[in-house]
Structures are given as C-alpha cells and as structure tokens.
Image 1 (cartoon, one colour):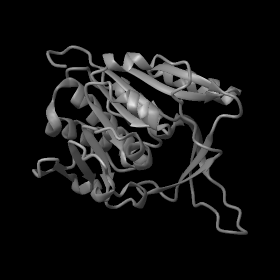
Image 2 (spheres, rainbow, N blue to C red):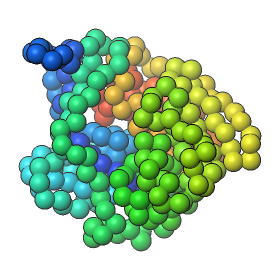
Image 3 (cartoon, helix red, strand yellow):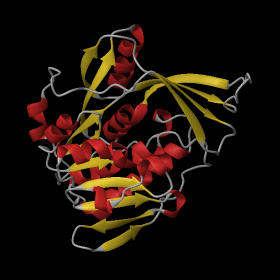
Image 4 (cartoon, rainbow, N blue to C red):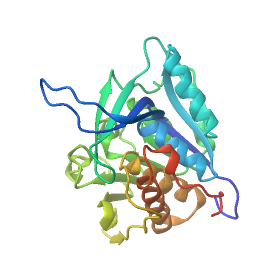
Length: 283
C-alpha cells in the first residue's frame, strides 16, 4: 500500500513473559545471579507485533494467552505498545522465559519455561479478516493458521516454522532464514513449494536473497544508531520491518532495507521493545 496510507499488517505467533538479566547461565551444580532484571512481553510474535505497530502500521496480532495474571499482563503491555491483540484464552499458566547476556554487547542465552503457545485455527478469532491485510508475518505453531495467513496480500514466514510451512503447502512471498543459526537453516530441497524469495540474514554483514526465478542479490547492514548492547529481538524486529515494507509497497529491496534498520535499532538497547525503531507509516 503506497501513498502514505497506513498499511494493515497481521502477526500470527506466540508471546512469552520474559525476564532479562545480565550474567552467565549456570552450569550443572552452579548458582549464578543475574543483575539489572526487568520484564517485558516478548517471543517471536510479541516482539514483531510491537515493531510493526512502532512503524506506524495498523497491527493485528493473532495469538493465545494463558488464563493467569501473567497472560493478562502480557496482552495488556502489548496493547500499550499500540498492538490490536486478538487473543484466544488457553487454560493454564502463560509461558515465561529468561534471557541473559554475559556482558553488554554480547549474545544472549534463553531459557523458556513451559511450551510456547500460539492461536489455533479453531480458536474463535477473526481469521477471515486476514484477507484485508496488506501483509502478514507468521511465527505460529498451527499450519492451518498459516494457510489463513496466506489470505493477506503478502506473506512472510520465519524458517523456525519450517515444519508448519511444509505441512501447509502454501507459497510465502518471503521466507526468512539464517546460515549462522542452526534452528533457522533451510535446505531448499525440503520445500514442496518454492517461496517467491528466500532471504538469509548474516548479522553485521547484511544478508543475501534468492528469488524463485534464480535471481540472487544482497543487502547491506544498516548503521547502528549506538553501541551494541543486547541481540535479543533483533531477528524478529528485522522480520517485522520486512513485513511492513512489503505492506507499504516498497518491494523486496526496500523491505529488506527497512528490516535492517529495525534490527540495528533493536541491537542498541536492553531487551527488545525499548530500543525498537519508531517512525511514521510513510517514513
């Protein structure tokens, strides 16, 4: 969608209540202490939904929340970020997680407490409204909700959900992968349907892409607006930027450039939400 009109963008995925801290994760038999703790709603769906909203898009987040106070807080915090949270209530405690960086500027380690929870296709959510969306990002766990997401004009999928993509049989416009992260690698021979584009992120080196017609290209990393602090949420912020860029009608190169800016901003703050890129819809 062009001309400065606010794009309608959906995110289908999970949300965790995450505690951030500084310090090492313990080895067996050890006790370690994490300093400067704080909490925020996070996870692949929560981080990307917040970034979509901060880019000025009309964000609709299809998710699930636990039936406890933690689930309520997670949904409320994302609403405060400008996200339209479309959440099914699933009985049981909401998923929690812990992220620790050994030292600022370094990578993080994550422990998830419980199973990540996403909306299911039989949850009473407005799935038909996905056809009204300019773009959608999928990081859910139900292949049928990915089929529903294909109703959007543009569909972006993370390779962390490769099993759901293969099961669904849909063709995404962009599949986001990584050669550096084992959980995000893609062997194109495993895909029953070739995506219109596969992009491989390479951190500070930008990344590369391959179109279905065989055309290959690269993008460069965006300059950091400050010193690197915490890598948590950078990939999900990048994916959100790519999705919004497609929804704005920027094309793949423009969408990748916007995603790179989002990832760079996220890297310069602790956690994910506080340092995300904020700009108007047409910026």
